[in-house]
Length: 299
Image 1 (cartoon, rainbow, N blue to C red):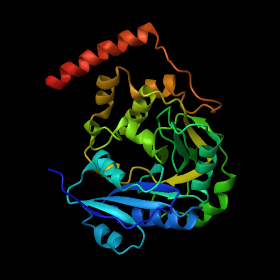
Image 2 (cartoon, rainbow, N blue to C red):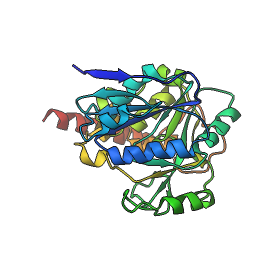
Image 3 (cartoon, helix red, strand yellow):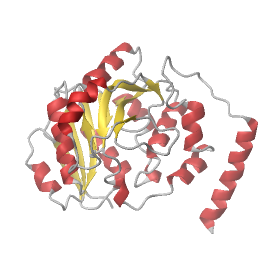
Image 4 (cartoon, rainbow, N blue to C red):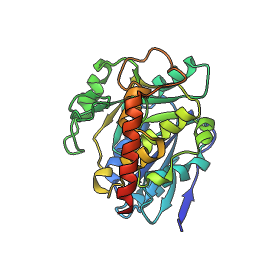
């Protein structure tokens, strides 16, 4: 049984409701919230999902004014934690952000500018990450500029001076945090899928659910920037086999979904076509892979 306590204090005055799951990562959480307070253009609602919190997080967050939080004595992972915050959202727009991120000035205003250009509430937008090291994932999108890979080496002043000069156009393939979505679109697909607990591959699964529901606007906003230290919490957790779960659920890999459905990383010009047809050879290959993965899961 999941036991979650709640402490909800905010009023209906904000533009975004920012959900931040955290797991014994107090120093990074403090820096993340500091950045939101200093660099946000709006008075946004902040909801923190505290997993365990036995490193002092619970005591610290309880003493913060105008921050809502929920608490679980066990580590629920990302999916349960974020979903548990949904009933406490006070605004139309849900932002999902990690605790090892630092929001750059105007990040939220740039997201709202893009939202106001759209004629629909059915979208998934992302901020653009600035990261210290390039990953090996060919579908990953980020501005690579090293302002430190830890709090101890973080060059905050340099980041603030240079972030406006780090340019990127809007790009295809919004999927990973920070993401923003209308609450009715979130509710349409039921939030994050708990079979991906503690959370690996819950991001592509969430956007695939949106695709299956007919959403065709997925893009990253180049002017909305967030610095990401990189896996300061997920690097400590025992990971689920999310790639296999995604394959069995959707009949293709997350990498193929990113590249052939979302055109991940390409310049975003307009929304995607209604249908994407995989090559016949790809369909056969993924049918075989699903059979292999299914057999292995029972061995």
